[in-house]
Image (cartoon, rainbow, N blue to C red):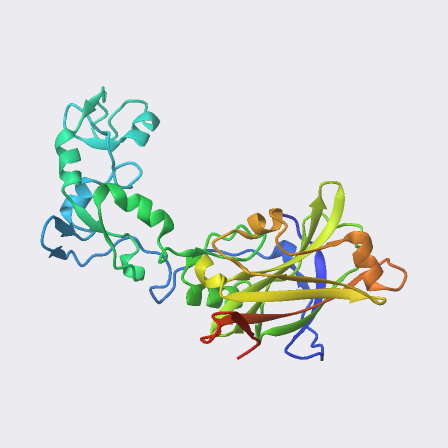
Length: 333
C-alpha cells in the first residue's frame, strides 16, 4: 500500500489540541524482532518433560516421539496419510508432491508406501496445544489438536499496524510495546478523543492512511484507524476502532465517532472489532464511520481544497445492571 504525507493533529480526553510530528509513512520500514520476554511466538520447548495423566500418554512437543511425527521438509506435524520411502524415511502428504516423489533424505523414489505404524502411534497420543508456553492449558488427541490451535484464545495476535505488511506477532503487551517503539504510533490514555485529520490534496484519496492511534482505557487497548480509499467509483474516508483482544472481549465495549462542520454532523456508534480481524477485513466490511469525499470537504470548510476533518469520539464499557439485567454504559474509568 502506498502512503501519503499526511499531517494529523490530535488530542485525547480534552478539547485542547496538541501538535504531533508530521509523518512520512512511505519510508517507514519495520523488521521482526525477538522479545526479551516470552511474549512472541516460540513453538519449541526444550524441557523434554513427559507427563502421564490417567490414560493415553501426554507428551511435550520436544520429545523424541513428537520429533518422529515432524515432517523433515516443512517441520510441521504429520497427519495421515504419512508416507515413507523404501528405507523408512517419512514425510507428510503435502510435501510428498513438493519433492517430486523423491525422498528428501536418501533421494530414493517414494512410491505410495504408507507408514501405518507411525499413524497408529499418532492415534495413541495426547499432546498439549502448541501455545501452551503462552498459557493454554488444553490437551488434545493428536488428530484434533490442529482444529483447536486454529481458534485457540492463546494464539498470538498479528501486528495491527495498517499497511506496512508487518509480520510481527505476539501477545497484547508485546504488540503494544512494538507499536510504540517500532511503529512510533500515537499513544493516549483515556476514553475520549478529538482528532483533526489534515491532507493538502484531498483529490488523491486512493490508499491514503493516517498514523494509527492507540488508546488505553478500562485496562484495555484500542486502535483508531483513519484512511481513504475508493468505494466502488466513489472516494471515501473511513474511521473505525479495533479492540486489542479477542472478539468475545470486544463485545463488552462500544464506541461512537462524530464528524461535522457548517452546522451538519454525522454520528457512528458500534462495537469495536477484534484485531483478530485484519484492518483490511474491517475496512472492506464498511464497519465504521464512512464519509463521502464531497461531504468531508464540506465539513472542512473554506474553499474545499484542503481536508481539515475533525473526528471526535468516546469509548465506553457496557455493564449489566444486577437489578434489571439491562446493559448500562460505563463512560470512563
